[in-house]
Structure formats: C-alpha cells, structure tokens
Length: 289
Image (cartoon, rainbow, N blue to C red; front, side, top):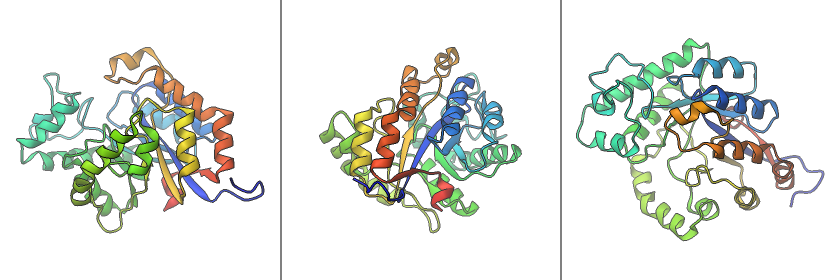
C-alpha cells in the first residue's frame, strides 16, 4: 500500500470507447470526464452522434481524444465504396458482423488498401472537427486482420505515439476473465501472432491494457485485483461506459445496462480509494507521451 503522503506515481489510462455511438453514451462519458474519472476517450467519427460527442468534449483541455477506427458498423466515409464492398452490407453500411468482417479480408487481397483510404477519411473527419487525435484504436479490436498493421503504420506516419495493443498480457487476463486458465491459454495461443503481425513500427508505443477479454463484465473485485497487482508505470483500462438509452438497442451493441454499471463503478468511492491506495493517477495518452 502507498504511503499516505506519497504522490501518485503510476498513470492509469481509463479509456471510454464508443463515443459518438449515441447521445446517451456521450452524456455518460461527459459526466465521467467532468468528475475526473477518465481522461482518455475514443471517438467513432462515422457514427450518428459523433458531432454531439465533439461538442460535449471539446471543452476539456486536458482530455486525450483519439479515433476509434470503425469498419464494423455505420456508413463508410471514403469515396472508395467499390474497394470496401466485401465489408459492406445491402444497406451500404458496414456488415455489423465480427465473423463476416474477419472473413472478408481472407478473400479480398486489395481490401487492405481500401481500408487504409477509409482510415484516412475518418482522420480527415476528425480534423474537420478542429481536433488532432491523441491515438488510434480499433472498434471491435479485429485481431487477426490487416487492420492492426494499417493503423500502426498510419500512427507512425502521423507521429501518434500510442496505440492500444491487440491482446492483454497473460498476467492481466488471469485477473479480468471469469475463467483465468482459459484467459492464460488464449493469451499464449495468440502471442506468437501478436509478435509477428502487430509489432508496432518505430516511434509507435503501446502500453499494457486490461479489459478486452472482460468487455461488459468489469466488477469492483476485478478492478481491485488489477490495480493492486500491476506495478506500472502505466496501464490502460478499456471500458465502455455511458447512459443506457433506447438508441442503444438499434446500434448493434450487446452492451446495454453494462454501460451504466461501468459508470457506477468509475464514479464509486471504492474506485477512488483504490487509486489513492495503490498510487494511480487518472491520465490520458497525451500525459504518457
């Protein structure tokens, strides 16, 4: 336990994914930033409430706001609709299917180039809001696809220092999943692919992250286990907080009441006490650069 008089020495990057998906999610994220319980937000610029999210969050000068690159749902921003065709459904939007998205890359060798153009288009939309992203990460993670290499190369070109890694370290998986041995085995099974396919280019750094394997399942106990047993100096906690609203049911997300549960956890006195006890300070990617 930290000495009562010692200042926090470790950066906890609590990231709110999915900003821009609905107005309710944006309201919840705004409340958490205002309360000082997160400083890192990932924005989906091609989602229905993106402009609302920007208007709510631009007033926070110390917020790290990055791009949550989205080729899973909603409409593409690139003009290269033909090149993106394997990822699009009959309505012209992205497939809204994780397995379908992963399969699309297997039989479409030119798809990676079209995805890079879509990434550039989403970054252009980000810039059109008058903002510079602090980071790029990926909606639905899409591990095992070329999207990881595409975003890493783009981050290097644009001088963005941080990018979320595609897999949690085994030591963290053991603490965040309901099945610790399964979590460890999963980490070991894909660690080789991670080293080969997802090693970041020079100048692009990643930090350990927790929460990918327990999406929608964060509890106070899991959070305590991670914060008590991680040495630092920095850790990202991946979360999806926000207000539950009717729009969520129409946005192809399985996270409904779980988003308010995460808000409650982050706003709780217990979470604040864990930060103080174990020397963590709430940070954003820009604070770690």
